[in-house]
Image (cartoon, rainbow, N blue to C red; front, side, top):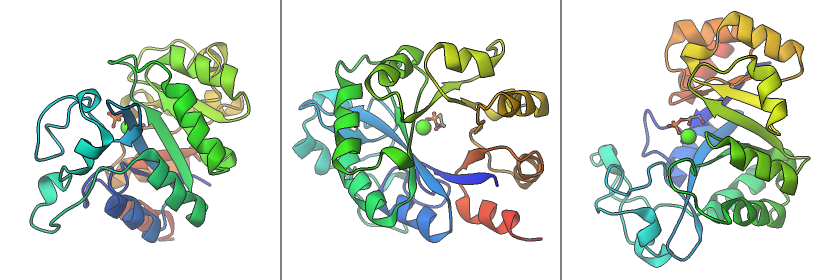
Length: 241
Ligand code: G3P
Ligand code: CA
């Protein structure tokens, strides 16, 4: 059955990558959540999409120039100011602590294709181990060297290559770089790619799928999963028949 992943939680209706957003996706019946990780100045994995805090908080600057203490003082309600007064940037540890209690799947996207973030893989893995979450984690990254590194460090944990388009035989490619799945942009997720990958034992989970027609197509094609900003809507469509 196609799994529904709340993209940055329930980002279409709640402040992305915050606990409010993750809790909502869980309440709405999503099978899992997706989140983005950057490193703070003091090397703590924090959950925020961009390299800078500008778009999603009330401040400016690079995440890697701010300590966790400084990041915690920011307000990440972003475009949902009318509905919510305040939301913190969570640490990865806080989200894993919550997810381990709920036993929900977490796709951890390492945002290390623009900034290198030395040691990020080790730091993230340490937290996954601490919370005994290995069986519920899918790592992903646009940085495929990082997928290779994760595979060396944790060969048993699921990993997927993220990409926009143009990878030749992505079901083979992901195995070459140490991945086990593929997370293509929805435009690259044709019926043939989905079918051939899954025939090769490679699960496909496209991003970001927000329209009903595409959701229905992916359910019909028995795609392994997909990421959506509207998990509630996806759950309704999945179970409407
Ligand atoms: O992991 C799927 C998707 O989140 C990748 O793109 O930019 O939304 O992080 P982005
Ligand atoms: Ca992401």
